[in-house]
Amino acid sequence: MKKKPNPALPESYKPDWAPENSNDAFAVRVVTGRESHHDGLPGQSRTVSGHPSKKRPELSVDDHVAGVLANDRTVLARTITLIESSSPSHTQKAQEVLNRLLPRAGKSLRIGISGVPGAGKSTFIEAFGLYLISQGHKVAVLAVDPSSSVTRGSILGDKTRMERLSRESSAFIRPSPSSGTLGGVTRKSRETILACEAAGYDVILIETVGVGQSEITVRSMVDFFLLVMLAGAGDELQGIKKGIIEIADALIINKADGDNETKAKVARADYSRVLHFLTPATRGWKTEAYTCSALTGAGIPEIWQVISEFAGVTGQNGSFDNRRREQALSWVMQMIEETLKERFYQHPGVKQAVAGIEHEILQEKILPTAAVDRLLGIFDGSQKNQ
Image (tube, rainbow, N blue to C red; front, side, top):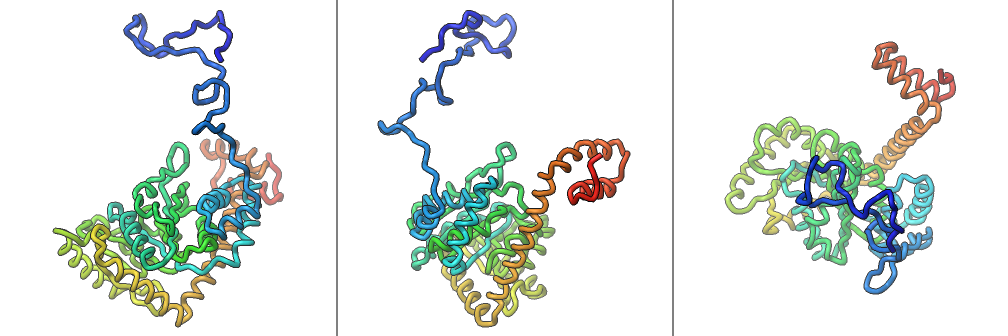
């Protein structure tokens, strides 16, 4: 429905950025608004296939729990969205859901996957996931996407790159924004893992953004850490190789096919020599280098055999369970740090004082250490805001 004509505004006019003295050849015109929704349609409910669109009803705690345990992928996705939400009400609800799901979690093999840019991580994960499904496994992929610098949301590129895997009923792919978190791992990734395990997924694959020392974050939440490398990457990557290799349980040189197969074998030999001098990342396990081709599938079964052997060896010598316990304790301490940081920046006194203290620092009227003491004093109540 059109608005009543406004005598102050014509029905259409040129935008303010139009060139001066532009004639009718300038085609852009601004049309006065209508009473409508954001999509420009008249003021009525939009319809899809003849049915008015309705807001999805909010799920209760029972709905979330029942849906996840029944492996309803739609409910699982909504549960993960609830977990990732920063709303206090959502956080409390998510904790209730997770507490009820906890007895059904913890029965998966958690595998972290990282690698140099261009190594074909997503292609490898798809080929690997399809193979695992063919062997009777249920696979959840937590593909941690780079965050948009504008919206802070996920770019969602990984799900589109794993098109074949996403069509499998025994697979669940969840792209999540990294949001600038250390190592590209989302803050709630550990809780997301628990939800996927409760849904019956027995292999959890976590793909991370980039490589470097910060990838130690993913090491702290998985059982097995797999590093995907590329033959002929050049010496310019040496600076990031050692730090990441030290925490890997296996190295895979991908794209070992065609003309690149020989180069991949040479790279495998080079990495094997390097690994000989490094302390293994896991007690009782020797890290080795392997080759594979995500394109042809060559080497994929052998990789799963290595991971299965790892689970057996570490299960027998106790390092598997010890790592899980250490990770649980580390998780607690990390959440304490994050909660304290959040409470600090949300403290009314701190929020009020920050701008003034920042100004004093820029004007060199106060030392940074003194600024820290003042803000912490305001936070713990030992100092009043001046």
